[in-house]
Image 1 (tube, rainbow, N blue to C red):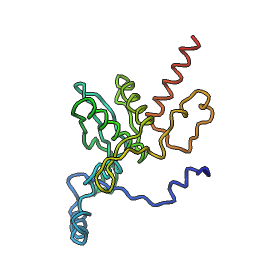
Image 2 (image 1 turned 45 degrees about the horizontal axis):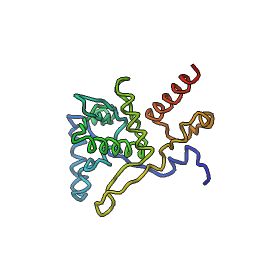
Image 3 (image 1 turned 180 degrees about the horizontal axis):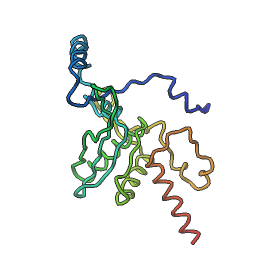
Image 4 (image 1 turned 90 degrees about the horizontal axis):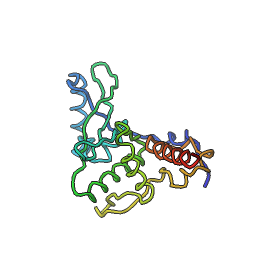
Length: 200
């Protein structure tokens, strides 16, 4: 397969949903009402799916609260009075259920974020290992997502790393034109740490 340069990613135009800071400028609100009146109902609500929400997310912050995984979504919001973007802690996704449900939902969220090149950060060093463990399972096994008929299928992000990418003898061959998320760096950190322990 021919290796692509990083700039080739941007040759295809991508459009992302955007939220608006409150209060919305009156002239801008009038524009939105006119625009929405011309569109069908499905186009009025840009955040109708996890995919849409993830597309607009600047970064995800992983945390553990009361022993339950939480994803904090940091998203751009448009100040319609000054026409400037700012970034907000827009919402939290609390992963609940039994252990199997929680693991599946965390890995599915990581998988979608990785596919859309949304960086995932641990909120602090206390949750690094748990995040790294979930991410390792994503790389090894992929994640599940609904197909056109609503059936769950197992997929692997085409841009995700493979376990071989984290081997010591591959570190000098790291391809920086690819997306390397903070979770990838967590994996590399553990590899280097393990190597130092062996040397000692």
